[in-house]
Length: 193
Image 1 (cartoon, helix red, strand yellow):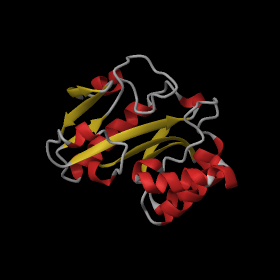
Image 2 (cartoon, rainbow, N blue to C red):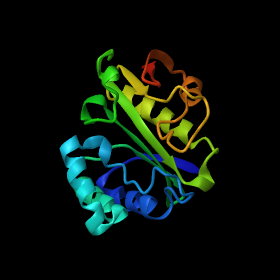
Image 3 (cartoon, rainbow, N blue to C red):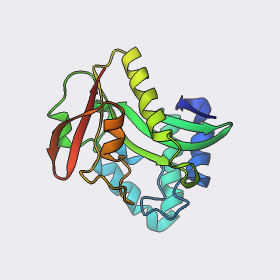
Image 4 (cartoon, rainbow, N blue to C red):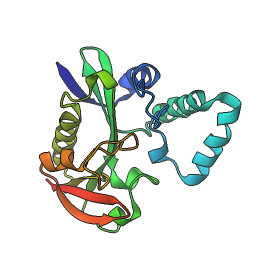
């Protein structure tokens, strides 16, 4: 049975284990990734990229993730099959993201908003409803915390491709989200809580 848990300090090892061992094992061009960039400004990302040649991409990203986990800067949810972490959803207050939320989304807010900026699910666990479970949990938690809405930012394409880490439009529609605005091949999908 799959369970969804918010990322906490106690789950840091599970987070790292997921990105070390199961994320992007299908040679997806988004990997390696430890989902640190959504919380970093451009200057920090440039510094990090310069270290890729010295320490390697995965090692550098992992070092940044470890530091950011200790500082409680990475927010989101892990999916578990028993004790094994099998998926990740990056979701947090829209204001906590340095650059992954499209600028036009911040210009079209409707109150206190949680943004879902990416999903990664271990290849062998895809198609089992984990992304839907993530969205349900994000919406329930956001409502309990007094948020007005939850948003996602999928591409206009209805088909999944290797760079579709935001999830497909249909995923959000199925969860009761509606289209708010389209711009630059992206859509704001919003659910009022």
